[in-house]
Length: 470
Image (cartoon, rainbow, N blue to C red; front, side):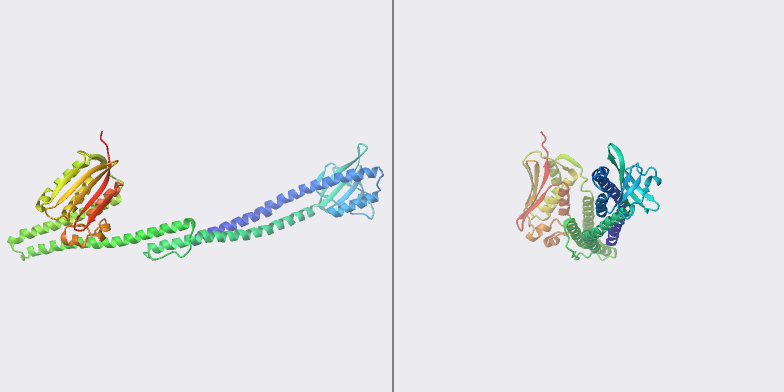
């Protein structure tokens, strides 16, 4: 990726440099030359007008001699680097600043009858006088309200092009400095944009390979720092997921192996006659118990899988939570009677309507009550209550059993987590019941909390959206 972006940056730099150079030296030169010629015309025209007004009239008034005028025009010639002619009305040159030895009688109309017709003429060539193209500026001299002569100022077109080249050279030197500064800017951009992207790419590849210990050594800032933090967060999640997968496989293997080993052992014992016929019913009950345990494990795994991928798909309806509690509690009548546990239902109102997924909330109640019975002592009570507070209905399942160790309270929501007491006391547990409860309540965007004291009991309290049925 770094090479690709670097190539693009270099290509952009070169294209910009070449295009700018072409614009300056092709179109820029032409435009500059036109502007120089235009400005030169203005300067020379103003000078021609001043000469016509200042010296032309004085010559015809005989207030200045031709020699005096020649001296003044020669000074102007030297200062402006131009050739100045004074012509009579017939087009004959009677003063030439570049031919002071003798005023040769040159008639410009013999070369071109339209020579004096326009104020400006470009690329004029007069054989025997000058072979290179000239720019000619012409201004008539008026005396007694008529044209008595002309002032012509001539400058070579090559001198104008030389002036253009001078300015273009100056611009090119400035352009080279600009290119150097632009190169420094591109280096800075490369350091600020490409290198961080390369470092982040390398970090992403390392995390994808499972090297979660890799850390980006570069000092990142702005959005790159935020992206780096996001990648680190993803890496942490991947690491946690990898750890969870290892634990998941280990726990599933353990919970599958135990009942399968029991079933396999008892079936083989029955088949080879190790277990006498009259004792087979008792061992068949054990096999049935283990198969129910396997069934519950697979059912809970499917439930969690559906919750993981379908959290948003809740079948929301309005129902009376008190009736759901009564129905669910009734399903535990046999277990409670056998264990001599009393289920007490306490409702602050006769009806308490909530807005939730009926079947999933029923499963939450089933798991919580089942968990309470599992860890309650014989001849004890379990309290299931509801209370409406504002826009929420609080549902509580409280037992007076063995409680949860303080160091295990935060872990009970983890999948497959079981306390040592749980594994010893209840081999049927899968460690998934409370995980399912947590996922269902979270899917409803509600909260569930646990209060537990070891040796005293445990209380689970969760909230649901309350609905007033007036």
